[in-house]
Every structure is written in C-alpha cells, then in structure tokens.
Length: 214
Image (tube, rainbow, N blue to C red; front, side, top):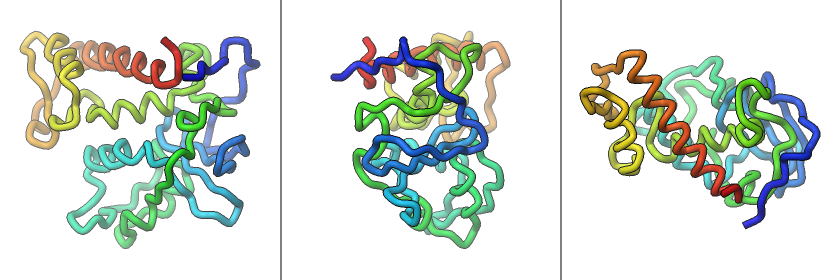
C-alpha cells in the first residue's frame, strides 16, 4: 500500500465553513463539511450531482441511526439546520419531505482513501491534532461511525469486540451504553473522557494503517 507523504508538505488551509476544492480525484470537485466534520461529497462537473464515496455508506447510515434522522420509510424526519458533519449544501436540502435516496447517492472509489490521494485542505490546526489527524481527520471520524461508535454509545452488532473491551475497561462498573436500548444511561464525565480517549486512539491506529502508515 502506498504511504502518504505528508511530513514535508507545506501546511494547507483548514477546511472552514464547508469549502469547495478542485483535486486530482475521479470526481474532482470536493465539497468539504464544516470544521471538524466527517463526510464530503464529490462532483464530476459543476452541474453534477453531489455523490458520496461508497466506502462511506455504512458510516453515514450509522450516523443517521444514532441521530434518529430517518423514519421507517427512509424519509428524513426533520430539518437538520446547521450540521457540521456534512457540507452546508447537503444540510440545507434536508427536510421532512426528502427521501434518503434524494440526498445520499454513492459511487465507488471517489474519495482520498480509495485513490491514494492527500486532501488539499486540513481537518484541524496543529494544536488540535497530529500531522496525520490534520490531513485525514474526516476519515478517522468515518471509521468511528463505521465501527458502530458515537460519543460513548455503540451499535452492538457493528461494534468490534476490541472496542467493547476498551469501553468495559474504561469504566469502574464495566457498563456499556448500547443504542437504542440504554439511552437513559449515561457515563460520568471521567468515564466518558476515558472511553473516548481509548477508542479514539484505537481508531486512529486503524485509520493510519488504512492509509499506509504503520
């Protein structure tokens, strides 16, 4: 696997306020999410359709599940308003009259990970993350959701045993908050900090490996 050479690169701008960039990708127009967001869309031409990479599908579906944003007919349940995880263009289109398929369209091998490419913008500034996180923070976030983890809560049938063990070992009681059955439960602030720190490190390593960093 190709290793991404980011160590000697001049630092690019940070992706603020859902910017758009032209990059060397199959669909070159990249619409980034808001600061610290998660999902970007890609367009082949200016007039094209906003399309997500197929590899993000499970992450997106899990996010919508965690946030309860779809009903049984796959209609979006409400107007999201400002949502940092997606680009402004996507969130402005969401309302209770829109079906999932009108917003979420997928095509394989569109993203940076699938094309051995480096984003032209950064996810965060130096003080908020290591060099790898600065360039690939969106994909770290996607992996958390793909693996059934969000803000201390898990989807049991999608969360790997390694993460479940990390959570159990991070709390005095060994409790785990499972979606949607345990929504009345919560961790204290110390427990949540421990859980999120350990899980973040685990998923950081997985994402580095996917991008060719061992």
